[in-house]
Each structure stands twice: as C-alpha cells, then as structure tokens.
Length: 311
Image (cartoon, rainbow, N blue to C red; front, side, top):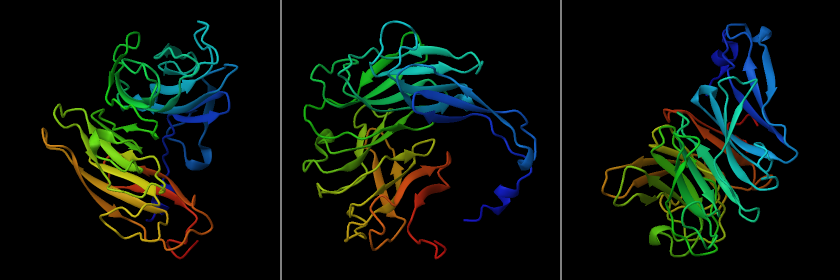
C-alpha cells in the first residue's frame, strides 16, 4: 500500500485526536487546517483533571464529543474510585460539559465501551447491573444516549457463566455490535472457546450471529473492529478458524469477515485469512492493533513480522 501521496499532501486536517495519559483525557485541536505539513500547529487541551484515572476514549460527532471511562469524581457527586462511563460534550473544547452515564458500585467492572458516529448509541460490556444483571456476570448492553441526562439501556445477553467477555465495538451507524467471547452466546459456542460474534440491532428475531467456529479453548482472540455499516469486520487471532482452516500452527494472523444481514434470518459471515505467518517470531503479540476505514475498503494493523520483505 503506497502512502506517499498522503504523506506529501499539502493540506492536512488535524481536527480532534484523543489521547490517554494516565489520569486525564487530552485533545488535540488544529490551529491551521490549511497549513502545510511543516507548519502544522495543534493545540493540546486537557479535558479531565481528576485524581483518579480516565481512560479508553472514543471520539464521535467529528470531535463534538467523547465517550470514556473514569474512576474520577468528575461531577463532584461523591463517586470517586468507582468506574463509571462518562460523555464529554466538546462543543466548546476549552469548557467541556460532562455527563455521567452510569452509577456503578466500586466492585463492578467495565470491560469495554464504544459509541456511534453521531454520538447517540453506545455498546457496553460490563458486569454492572444497568438493567437486570443482578448476578454481576459479564453482559453486553446497548445504550441510547440521545438524552444524555436519561440514557436508556437494553441488556442484550443473559449470561450466567464466568466465561470471558472481550471488548465490543458498535458500528459507526449504531446498528451492529461486534465482540469476542468465550461464553456460549445463544448456544452458538458450546465448547466455550474464544469466538467472534455480531449483533444486529435491526433483527428482532435472530440478532446474534457467530463470525467464527473455533473449538480450541486455548486460542487467543483480540478486539474486533467494524466498518461504519457493520458489513466488514477485522481482527487478529492465533486460532485456526474453520473455515478457512489455513492456520494449523496456531500462529497470530489477521482476519477479515464479510457480514450479511437479512432479518429475520440470523447474521452470517464469510471469514478471510489475510496473512499467512508460519512462526511466532519474535513473540505472539507481534500482530495487533487492527483498524478499518468507515467504508470497509482499507484495513490496517501493526506487525513485527516481515510481511513485505522490508521489515
């Protein structure tokens, strides 16, 4: 893939880029959107200033807002040291307006959260009792935060086991959720191995679909990422997913799934193995941090493998 033209582009739009730095969320804002690369100027704004960690930011609305988790008492309501979900309205980045979306006992845990492009829909993996999760097991939730003062949550799973539930991501249009889990989601994973799943908000009959068919309980799965409409799904894993059955050595590979939705039929997928690594060298974490463009046509990942002959 040739990025030369991108690198040499004279006009660069910086807009909003979120970073996480121990106890605060910071924001970069462009001061000269039409400046040449050499003259690019950004302003760093610290959004939070709590004594506890804020983390895992997701930007939405072209930088108009950010969803994040925090243990800090950002609204001065006595909720310090509790992990809760917050939304910051960045209409005026120098004076962010915070909304607390959950109120968790300190023993509860957030596994993941993500937000749609228009800042109105969120996906949450948590042990919190947001609706009807009294057993404190990891569950998947869908949230409508159109009214930030009155978020509405729907519990999508009814898990009673102690299996693992890995980060979920909602599609940009807010209609699909991708996640990985060792739970027996809708009896699609009886061996309770790590597998990837998809949830279609628009399917009232069979909303869950299994993206993979892994039966190896010891395999590693990573966080999935979806295109804006949820039609494509990328991830990295060391499982020999069947099909395509192209990874017998259980080496970390990069995968892409084509997803099809035809309610009320359950979502279906076709899995493609993009890389063909034959050894875990230097170690098994050398293929990760995958991403996909909104239209699903461009994917990215980091790797220490010599995939192109130039590494």
